[in-house]
Structures are given as C-alpha cells and as structure tokens.
Image (cartoon, rainbow, N blue to C red; front, side, top):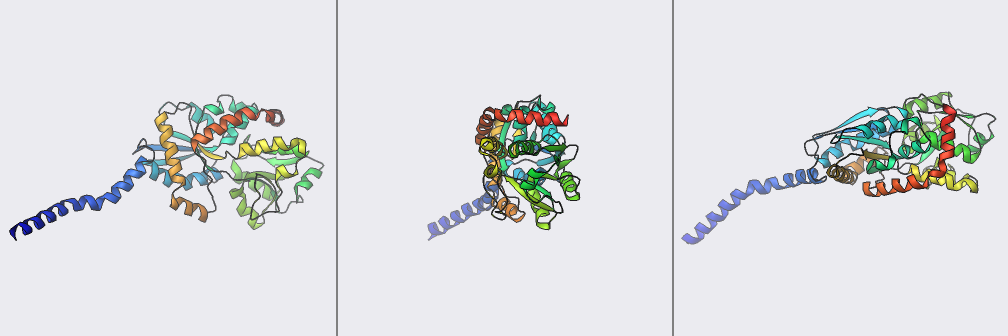
Length: 349
C-alpha cells in the first residue's frame, strides 16, 4: 500500500512540473512557426517596404493588406510602409537598386515597369537591369482595364478607333499602363496623346471622370468602385480571361488584327507579373530565402484570404523562384515591343 501511495505521489509531482511546459507549448510553437517561416532571419528586425505610388493607390492598398501578415510570418518587429511616388514606379525602383548591402528595404510595385522601361529607353531606367533584381513573390495579377468617363461620348473601343483626333490619356509617368496604351494604339490603329504629370491613379481617374482626359488604364480592383457607381465605363481589358462579372467587356487579344496579336499577347504576359515584392541586386541569400518564405506563408494565411475576399482585393500568388525565372525569360522574349515603346517615350519628350 505504501509503495502505491509513493508511486502516485511521484506521478503527481512529475505532472505538476510538466504542466507549465505543456500549457505554454501551443503559444511557443505558434510564435516559433511565425518567426521560422523565413528561417528566423527577420526576427525582431524592421522591414521597410517602399511602395511605388501614393498612399491612395492600388499598390499601397495591397501593401497595407499584407503588412500585418508579413510581420506575423517573418517574425519582424515592424513592417514599415513608405510611399514613394514618381516616374510610374521608377523612383522607387532606382532607390532599391542603389541601397547599401544589408539594407532592410524592399520595393513593392509592378514588375512589368521594370521590364518595359529599359526596352523603351526610358531615362529613368538607364541605371538598372531588370533581371538582376531579386523577385520575392507576386501578390496579385489583376486584369488591366481601359476605362472612359461615365459621361463621355466614347462608349466603346470602336468609338476610340473612329476618333478624328488623338485619344487623350492622363498618365502618372512611363509606367506599365502608359506602355500598354502605346501598344493598344499601335495594334488597333488609333493615336494616343499622353499627358503626364499626374500623381497616381487617383489623379488620373479624377481627370477621366471630370472629362479632362478621355480614359486611362488601371488594375481591375482600382476601377471597380467608379465602374459600379457609373463614374467610369470599361471598354477594353488586357487579360487572358474575361471578367465573370462583366463578360461583355472585350478582350484586347480577341479583337486586334491577327498580325498584331502576338505583340498584344506579349504585353499581356508581361502585365501578369504585376504587384510584387522586389529586392535589391545585392540582397543577401539568407534574406532572399527568408522574405520569399514569409510572403508565401502570408499569402496562404486563412485570415488574409478571408480579408482579401471581403475587401475584393483578391490575391494571386506566384512564388519568388518561379517569378525570377519568368522575368528572365520575358526580358529576352519581349524585344519586339521595343520600337513601339521607344516611339511612345519620344512623343512625350
């Protein structure tokens, strides 16, 4: 009897000693998994995300959507967003190209601008090589939509083709939308008059709604609100899939002449690289792997996916390794676009 009592007492002592460890284990595992999504490299560090465009633009909205989840899965002490408008994303791209080794700074913007601007001979893209950036993961790939003002006399892309004057295109600079418009004008046989100097899509959208410009191109989520309210009318999409909500909007590759289809498809493929995290050329291998892992973990987080659906900012991930290969291929196969892009840049100089 005495032995049984002693054995029971020992079990209770061991259980009591283990209890704090067992109770704290789920919290410890969660914290550890969050910090180790990126191998622990960013644990307790500050990450600076330089966002191409202003605080009200589409890039900023997606960057803010991802911000808490990047912090959660990287283990960083803070993920700080810095808006850097200018040159259609080229200001932020050049900034990241020149940061010192070991810098905690990342660029968030459109990969397509990095590919297209050098092809066009843009003065703002002479200092960097797009294939030498480190691509850390795509967040989304939205269709690009050409919209006109809700009160505009232009009701269709055919109306644009029939204009007896150039199509006035408010632009924030030589970004991917500027180049897309040049390719569409070449393929569909209408002239484009780009008016630069606007700060972000909010400015160009207001110009279109007020009638100061004929139309502009934006990502689908940025146009959705004004389209629903009747302030803008979508007349063309540059994408490989029609919108399930707006199936009557024509797709560019379906309506351009056969001789121009490959050129427009090339542009559409480049645009699919879209909103992404991009690191400097001197980024450390451990930092690259850690950030890619954190982005992948964030984009598969159930809470983020629920928030993304609720806010209609749907994510469409592409991992950084795949993206790096895709950009290298696109940089080699897109040379046919150069003459069109070069001519477009010359027109605004």
